[in-house]
Length: 313
Image (cartoon, rainbow, N blue to C red; front, side, top):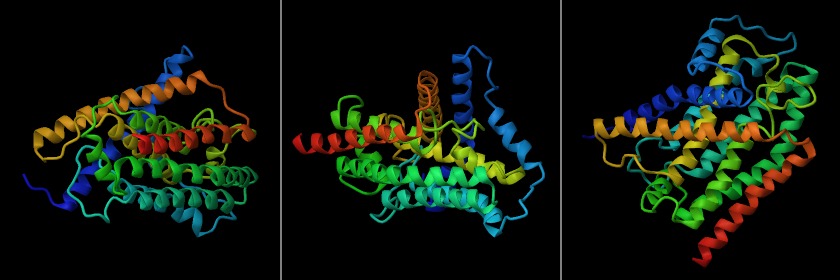
């Protein structure tokens, strides 16, 4: 069965958009059960986004065009990033496609847009959130570069599909470098999605909020777009970890049955990883702001150790 690049991209985007709110809800459900609460139904993420799309959009009197285009631009950028990260199918690509450096710049650009949004409304809390975000990004970005460099070095390529193809040739759990790299990627998920102990995406306490501080003046469909963007970003980072550590089930030869099976397997693996994320969040308290870089340094250390291990082996 042949499949065109356009259909392949649409398939990838469809899977990412479909499952991203579900993974966000699974994390919330696990955190709620850890606190002996019932938690939201597993489809609550879809209900929330649909409800926000029906709400009125209210802009600050000081808001410029940035507040109007940032929600759409952020989601569009992350959807472009989704084209670079194969979820259920590894396509045949050229060297220039799926470049992890491009993926890194796309993630950085979304952070820049969020920081501008927080400043644009003229809110004190928004400016505080943007300031904190930029302060942390000065440490996050170099660490992210090193983590992605370790991925590229282990796989011997900058193309994300080829990294996943390389991972399929390795027995899961038997490669020390992949295991070390997985620790760095897991920390990267926590850091880039603003989860405890780095940040709490569900808080509105002025002393602790970073991500939410930049979105306090956002409402209606704009907030829905940001919620969906956050979910998509988490799914893409989870995909990097899943398809590097447990690539079993990802399709290289396209068939309807293979794609269906790969989708189910990825849903199960992503759900398991979401449960782990929820358990980790429930097991730690939020770090003090000036101690957060210690967590980044752990990812940096494991990434450097991954490169050294690959050299020695």
